[in-house]
Image (tube, rainbow, N blue to C red):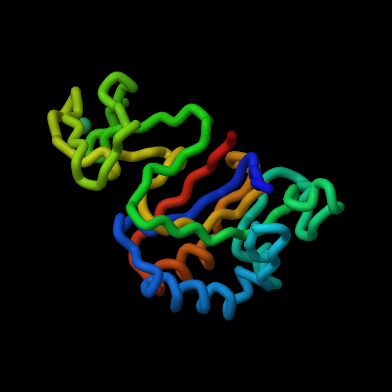
Length: 189
Ligand SMILES: [Zn+2]
């Protein structure tokens, strides 16, 4: 069975290459801090429940959001807030179907879609020249405005709607204590 998680909040280190060895102390640290909880697997799908301090580390916006932290029922079991560690052999361009907008990281000018063909994206290969300040930047260093991420390693909190929640300073500090520089983004399919 293929699990389709429809939306979520995803974290990735800004550094494109990230090995499984790099990931091990980080995952252990996130478990110890109570962000990641127990591992579960159903059919061929493996992920983690959220840990006991998860709600201190992710701030839900708006009043009394409905957050399911345990599987609702057998049929819809994956429709609840849980964490999946995703590791890819090569860096990938990770995004959902939601419309993403990006801008120059130097001057903030909008980069139009016609400059961006990411279907064959490979690390450090696609250089974009800003139409306004003329700065040349690898596409992964543009400002993706929390709409996409590039890399090999992703921590996905599934079943958070785009902009429904944001990471707390505590969580960002914790992530940065392992590796400096993180991006987060929302996906929706
Ligand atoms: Zn620019």
